[in-house]
Length: 147
Image (cartoon, rainbow, N blue to C red):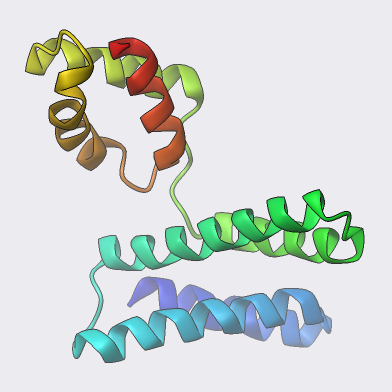
């Protein structure tokens, strides 16, 4: 399990450097992977590991938005550091123009013409961008192109 090995190595490095923030984040990520593995009853595939990391990133981004809106700057800074640690374990994210190009390709492939084809487009599109693009961004771009 390569991701677990990476987490263990980063955890050791954080301990040696006395970096409590990184250590705490890595421990949370490791626990999330282990919990998913226990629930599944067998080793996780790389795609499942990325799905767990994506979920962790999404949770942190949602919390960041809530804390920023509430003016809790004392919680925003540590959360931004956690997000950087989590992002290191995910594939490089596609930028908005790259996602828009993929959306255009999929719309052409499935022959979508209007809002009624939204589900068909999303069904074909999401496997292509899974783990590489935020679902909210994909949703927004597809609605804009079809609507």
